[in-house]
Amino acid sequence: MKVYDVIIVGGGLAGLTAAVHLAKAAHQVLLVEKQRYPHHKVCGEYVSNEIVPYLEFLDISLSSAVKIDTLQLTTESGASVTTSLPLGGLGISRYAFDETLYLKALSLEVTFVFETVTSIDFVGDIFHVKTAADNSFKAKLVIGAYGKRSVLDKQLQRSFIQEKSSWLGVKAHYQYDEFPDNKVALHNFNGGYAGLSKIESGAVNFCYLVSYESFKKEKSIASFNKSIVAKNPFLNHFLGNAKPLFGEPLSIAQVSFYPKAAVENHVLMCGDTAGLIHPLCGNGMAMAIHSAKIASELIDAYLNAENPDRGALERKYQVAWATTFKQRIRAGRLLQSVLLNHQASKLAMKTVAKSPWLLRTLIKKTHGDPITC
Image 1: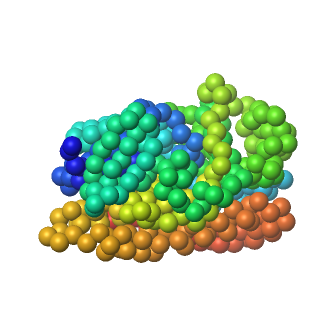
Image 2: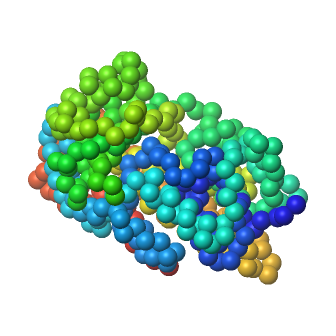
Image 3: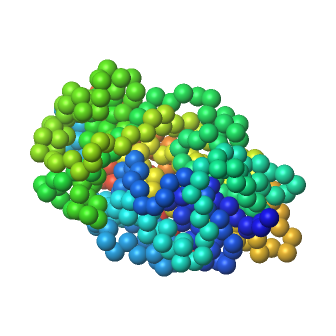
């Protein structure tokens, strides 16, 4: 049986980016993903410009993306503050972004298998990856990039999987010509918050995170939007005037913010699999891409070493991941706690309205510097 240099489990932003990077470095890569491309995912679909230099290094262009330079933040009652984004960002759907990365990976001869992985075992210094279709693959290294939550987390006995999460994510695209191209808006409502931004098609992506405690009082997403989300006057106007482009909104349950290890059973975890910044108040898309860069560079050095040291590789990745992302996750958690506290959000809005630089400072805390190569 062929032994790949690297098997990547999961084909989201982190997995696809790592596949492109490692294939560009002439390594043999297999990526196993359960869904064929292109497909939609629950995602805020805004990414900071910090990733642009790295994507250019990978010969990836996002020329169709919408350029964003302004942030609007509102409370449930309608208090609003607007500020410039220090680096700016791009609005692009996961449908388009993932497809772009996928086609690039194919051009670099990455092997794709569209099946669900059921187990990852490390035996005799070799990984054995099995799928639900009863196929088995071998590799020297494995990257786990399968997202927020999976049956693999149970198989790998990850501690966070035992904890129940009370968060639900909802997303849909809308036709709404009133929304400016250059803005991303973050609107608070009781129990959650929603992001609005344009994507490459001209549609507006509407994505929100809500506590299950708040959501369960309603019988459906439509009724929750009408009864709770629309109490924010900005969201009320949006929902009353925008035309939905999906038959039904997409949703994801059990979104977990519990701490995760960056390495589990010798598997290097990337993107949301390693740690999740609070959606819509952080920059998860950029974090996924950046984590793939960190893992890929260390893996490339390991595979090219005369005497590769797996333990050293894992330690270096854990240190690099924590150094790069822990502060951002902490800042995202702080911002979310403020947004979800009625009195705290009112006080915060009054403060940043008088001193917008405070808001820009917090944005910098949840975003990184341009990723250089």
